[in-house]
Image (cartoon, rainbow, N blue to C red; front, side):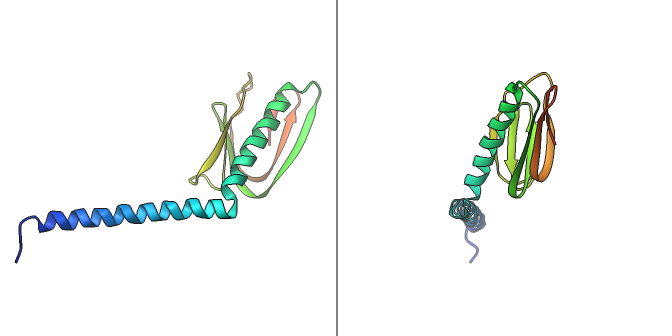
Length: 124
């Protein structure tokens, strides 16, 4: 009773099941982030740290700001864009940072930052 097209139907249904599982998993992750506030925290930290770095660029005198997070985040700046996420592979929030001649480039896994302006902005 091997009818024509049975294999194609089986592969198609398997594909539907896999796509359905991926949609359910992505929906679960987004609902979990919205419920726990993790997505909001990343977005808030990206905007806040980005604005602090921009403020350090325009400071007239020496400036030192210690900024701490509630848990460890991956913080990096690449080509003038600040990214903050819970790990390197996870979802990240971004903020476009105005650049200067120093070209900030860093990648840190940290629960706090020190932003310095002493003849150019430096982030530790």
